[in-house]
Image (tube, rainbow, N blue to C red; front, side, top):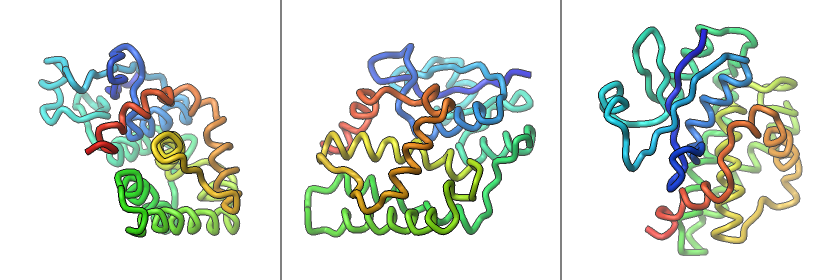
Length: 212
């Protein structure tokens, strides 16, 4: 059984996988579970009519399940887990919250023009919490095996590394070595290499947010 999934195409390159971390999360989940899928690349600046008819909100990612198009990566990955329980990727709820502040604090710091607004420290605190958790429970958030929370976080950490490196010449400090090792491990997985956007598309994707 092949599932259908719609994900963002690269800006300016409609035939190339784009930079949406939520789209990549869904693709990672399908890859890690070895589920065959048909991928539709959606140009978000010129959405095809069939896509808007199937999905009036026009958001990506969406997955076709029982002849219905389902949006929202949280909902999609939950449906995938229920329909394809093997291998299990469920993460204990208390572990999901370990990483919840990283992406919003990254976006805040990326958009910030004020070095004294505390946004950099907020991001460092969120990353330090992850570092402490991984030291105690690692190598992944839920222990020995990759789980849903890692697949949600990996694309966001990739965007963080690429966008902050480009726009702020900023890198994760060396003292957060457990986080850095964790990122290297996730980014080197076959599923990640296959589903990641090229760095130039990640940089282009954040340009409007940085210059807003």
